[in-house]
Length: 291
Image (cartoon, rainbow, N blue to C red):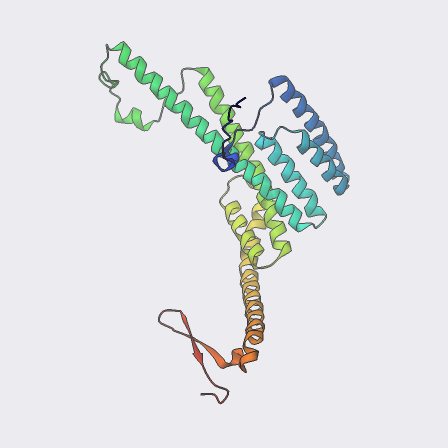
């Protein structure tokens, strides 16, 4: 008895990163969001009471039940978890959670822009179709309205459809909400990076503060912190770079000496000479006699 062969798609052909998350039906989604918000409210109260470790556990419970496609809600929770870790001086955990929040916001912003662009194109297509049918198939601009230069400079007229204005108002609020949470997450990650220290983290903190400096929604207190950190961090980053570079060369020298020792040589037999014109280096060999 023959069996039908089943064609299995190679795992490498599946783009897991871009797979659309499975969505719950509206009723189940609403129930999960309500449960997540309940845990979040408890966590907020614990944070206010200074019980940061317990608050983290409650925030984690809120994350666990929140649908994984709700990037904004999850970003808020991750940013709050980062705030708890800052209070506990757990810098690495704060960086990790703030970064997760920012990644979610970036993903959400891309989706929002793609959705707006798609809707815009659909509206343009409908307008062209309507214009073409109303003029017996003539080009859409065959009977274009003549507008004075003054009227053109005055900008677009208000939408005749109140629904369009409502949608645009909702989008503006959404953009403002995303920007607000992004600012909080960036402030928390920048603080954690600067506290953890090291060349890489300090450079990362500088980049975060530069992004914050370009945002218009910071409070006066946050802007003062950003400006102060942008003055203080660059020399600290440079010093960390020089220290880590010296340590790296010292380790390489020790490794080199270990490899050269059986040949009666050491790294002292090699001299690095910088070419001032190109900025590159060449290696000169010298014997123990100095030649």
